[in-house]
Image (tube, rainbow, N blue to C red; front, side):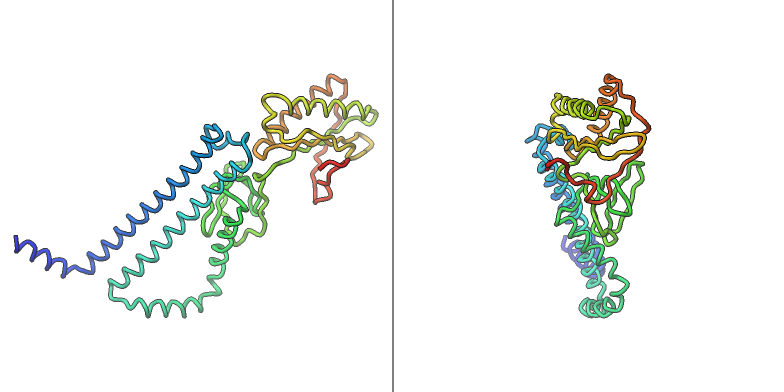
Length: 306
């Protein structure tokens, strides 16, 4: 038995540095697994708690709940993604330094040399540092979160992951875009607060405007008060009046304030109801031209509305 322990001790001394490196790698993997598991458990606990509180089967079902609940889920998932990246990189750097020490490298001298080298390569690495800082600021300031529909300039879509250096989002065609955080100069978030359905309806020039406006508003109010849609409409619909006049048609603007994730569904349903309502009135719609809001002047309220 004594010979066994003696041989084991001799084996450890002979291969001490190699075994230490193996222990460092295994320890780093175990610590990383534990920390990532802890972050994942916290994220799932927060998300599950929000779902239970609002009696929702999934995150999308929370659209009928207060907006803050949705933001808690999205922000928690985003912070979980960023923390996972930070943990991985921190453990890798720490383990690498320990391994260099076991290989008899002068870690202090290497760090000092790295400082000089870093200063020399600073100009080339400034984009990486810019990406990391911009990514951290976007998460801390809650500019976007996992699950948000955003316009980042280079691409528009649903955010799938927010990393330290790159944000990934998937557009309506299914294309996955990787956008460097340092290249994001503006963030248009379509999933925070509320959205607005804007319908510009063109009617013939000789139409009774007052009657058409009254019927449009009545139709929109019926939709807003229906059991299926009332949880998605935030405020009562409003007629903003005559938007434009041409030789062929008059354009009347109807607006409805909705929850962010319900904008498109409400818009489609409302267009169908308006079509049927105008058919009942005998009003035949002329050719429709696409009217797009440009700038703040196009989104100004009408008639004292908020």
